[in-house]
Length: 150
Image 1: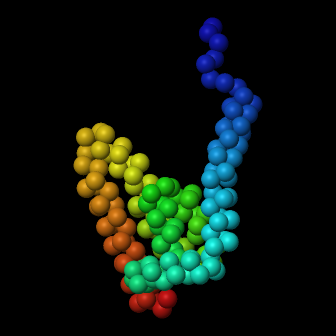
Image 2: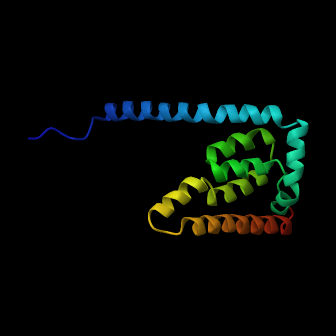
């Protein structure tokens, strides 16, 4: 009889726990500084000015201008960076849903576009499609939100 190649349950739990802790620490090292930075800057003149700069575009999605920073982080980096930026902005549950919908469609665009391009697809075109679909979904959700009393 051959020995089992599948580790025991305690070994799998131990491995999973330590892998999960490593992943958590990696995320915390990245997300916590972003959260603190945005929380410190959210009421400064620079953040208010930049938020005002993006406000005309973001109003179409029912969001404050400052939410644009989270979208930039989601598009260029990842969802975790976006969450770190969104958290101190004190958005409503609906606004967070709106951000989640749009960022779920279009996130990590540089890396994923590069991967798509490396497998023979038109990465740039698909990245543009993801941005347009995210915008269309966000506009649609905002329209429904306004129609049904948001």
